[in-house]
Image (cartoon, rainbow over all chains, first blue to last red; front, side, top):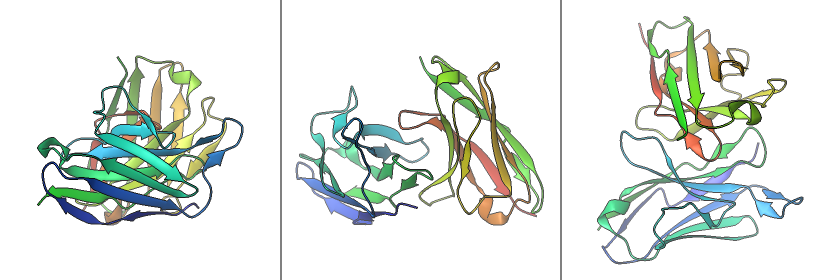
Length: 113
Length: 113
């Protein structure tokens, strides 16, 4: 199984500051036939199901604010919030959907400092 | 509008069985692989099972293999999860989803005596 190692477990950032969450896969999640990396980012608020933010590592879902960005380098993936807003307080998860059983990172709880 | 509506959750004793259902609408259900993911109270997301669009192939997490069975009825646009030999550690909200995009609201399964 592919192991997704997410860091940090929790993060406190001041309003308007940058937040960065990392996720590393234990092996490649690149699907060569379409040259896409099968990595998704989700935002989950208490009592709600996860909300998809990015798929293919860096393709932003329609309606997601552009202060959110996804990037990748090899097997390292990053979710960045450029200017933290109060509404961004949530837990964030990465997911590899390249190889079953699909696997999630352990989650990063983002709070306001 | 895509909708995934889970049902069938509830309280069950250890060793018991339960069948979850997920009714899908707003997309071509029979064209997509479908999945179950769960989340124990206060914990992260755990991938449970997957089934291909035609139902021919299934995959399971090691923690549920041999106890859970995923199935689907494309004529009814419905996904199922038959759970048996339930353990207290199976207590969780169970989500039906079309990865990576669409999630249901979840149904709570509580395994307790």
